[in-house]
Length: 626
Image (cartoon, rainbow, N blue to C red; front, side, top):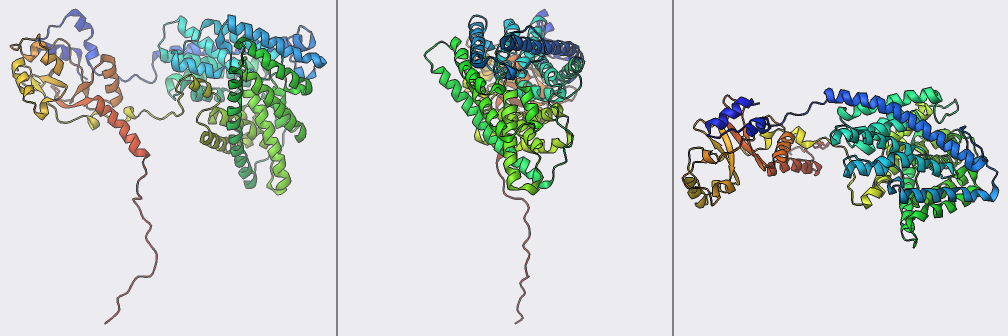
C-alpha cells in the first residue's frame, strides 16, 4: 500500500497545497485495511461477555424465583420461593380470576410503563437489532422480566425463556449504550446477554450460541461468536451452581438406537410437524388480528385474553403456568395418549389467545408442549399401524417437540442441539436432525415468515433469512475493473479539455478522469463537473484544480474494500493502481462494476444444460458388405 509520504509527494508534485487538515486525512486517501477477525477489541468484548454471562445467569435465576413466588401467592396464598405449579391449586372456579388480574396489571404496565414489554421477547429483540442499532430502552430491561413473571405467575401459559432471553439482550444492549462501542459491538453485546439468559434457563450453551447466530446476529463471525460462546458457557456454569448438572428435561433410561423404519417415521413426523408449525404461526397471528379489531384500547386486551386462559385452566389445570414439567412428562411417556392429546390441544388454544392478546410471555415452552404432545399422539398411531417398525413414543415426542420449534422459528440447528442438551440423550440426535430438517423444509415451503419474523415483517422490517458469504469479499478489484483508462495529463489546460469534451468523442463521456503526471503517476481525480464549472478560468491547468488527496485502490484489493472506500468518501469511482514503483493506473472501478459481482450470483442460480452425457449402450451398426 502507498505510504502517506508517497501520497503527500504525489500531491505536492501535482501542485496541491497540503494543509494541516489534509495532512491529518492523508491516510484516508488509501484503501482501507480489512479489519482483522481477532484483535484487542475482541479480547475486551470477551471480558465483558464473561461478566454478562454471570449477570445473565443471576437475572434468570431471579426471574424464575419471582415466577415461583407469584405462583405460590396467587394460587396457594403463601409467601414462598419454592418451585410451584398452578396445576395443583384448589381454587375451584375462582381460578378464572387469577389470570384476569394478572392481565390487568400487565395492561397497565404496558400503557404507562413501556409498550415494548408486550409480545414474545425474541421478535422485539430482532427488531432492535435490525432497525435501532441494537439500542433497547433502559426501562425495558426492568419492566420486561417483571411483566413476564406476573403473566406466568398468574397462570399465563407461556415459557420463561423468551422474556429471559429478551431481558439478557436488553442488559447487554444497555451496557453497550453506557460505554463507547460501535453498533456492531452493541449487537454482539445484545446477543451475548440473550445467549447467557437462554443458557442459564436450559443449561444449553451450544444451543444458546446457535440461537444467537440464527435469530439475532444474522452472521457467523469470530468477532461475535467467541464472546457469545464465552457468555453462554459462563451462564451454564452458573446454572450448575444454582440447579445442579441434571438435564432440564430428564428422560428415563433405555432409549435404543432407532432402526431404519423408525428413522423413516421420525423424518416423516418432522414433515408433519412442519405443516403444524406453519398452521400454528398463521393461527397465532390470526388471533392477534382479531384482537386488533376489538373496539377497546389494547391495554385491556391481556385481561380479555386471560378470560380464556382462566376458563381453560379451570377444566385443565396443566395448561396454566410455564409447564416445563409437562414437557418432561410427555417425552418420558408418563401420561396416556388420550390425556396428552386433550391437554396439548387445550394448551395451544389457551396460549394462542393469551399471546395474541399482546401480553408478555415466551413461545418456546408452549411450542415444546404442543409439538411433543402431537409427536406422541402420531407415534402412538404409527405403532398401532406398523408395530414392527420399532417406534419409540419417547423419541417421537422429543422429535415432535424439537421439529415444531424448528419449523415455527426456522432455527434448525438451535432446535436440534437444544433438544439434545436439555435431555442428554445422544441416541436421539440422528432422529432429531432428520425430523427438524424435514420440518424446516416443509414450513419454509408453506410460509415465507416464521413465528419470530412475522411480527416485524408486518411492521415493514426486512428480516434476514439466509447467511450467505459476502460475494464482494471473494472477488478482487482487478477481476471487475474496467481496463481501458482515459487519463488526463496534469499539464493540460481547462480550455483544452473542454474542447476535447465538446467534440463528444466516446472517450470524453466519462464522469470522472484520473489525472497523471508525465510519468503516468496518479495525481488525483477530477469529475466532469469540476472541469466544466463555469467559474473556473480556462487558462488554469488540471493540476491547479486538484485540491484533495487522491483516493484509490490496488488491483489486489477486494471489491468489498473498494465499496467501503467509495461509501466512506461518497465517491462513485476509484482508480486502480498496480504494485509497481512508482504505481501505475491499470483500471477504473465504478459502482456499476461492483454491481456486476451480484450478476454472478444470479448466473449461479440459473440452470445450465448438462456438460456431461452418459454414452448410449447398444450394438454398433455394421456396414453390409457389397
